Image (cartoon, rainbow, N blue to C red; front, side, top):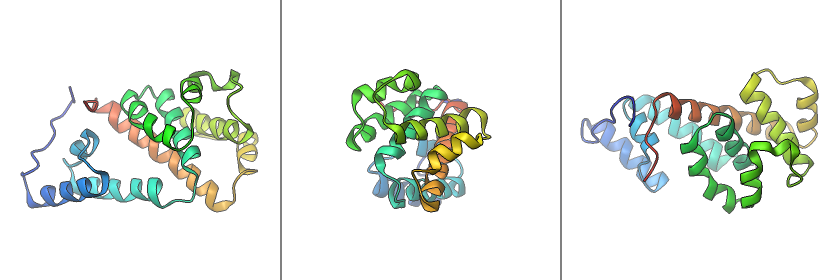
Amino acid sequence: MARISYPQLDDSPEIAQLSSQIIKERGKLHNLYKMLLNSPPVAQGWLNFLTAIRQKCLLSGKIRELSILRIAVINKADYEFKSHIPFGLKEGLSNEQIHALENWQSSSLFNDLEKAVLAYTDSMTKEVHVPDAVFQKVNQHFDARGMTELTATIAAYNLVSRFLEALEIDPEP
């Protein structure tokens, strides 16, 4: 059970309007967004930011989902992990790759690009400060826009997992 209550969707016209927008853009009102509606300005900013990350960037969906799933593993964010398995599969990750993320370093299922992205994701998530060698290895695969989008994706989904876990947001049924 979540640590704080979800707001009533008819508490205010602002919440009702924003929940309608979220349903229109996301297909349904997930518990994450229900919780965010406790602060409509935060919910609106979150929606705009994560929509840009997920739908407007040029970063490949496979790389995006690889990073998101790895972040969920590191942060023990089960809600995030389960939510992104279908996206990862749709974007081209295999079930085997998804389930090898726990110990990706010893797996032969990932190519050089994917290993570089996973190492970068690990550094950003675990240590925050990325060693030059890790950065240089991943930077070989991306231009400035790609590095910006990859870095923003990793940062954004660390935000997501931390928010989900701190408030113990209920998993989707």
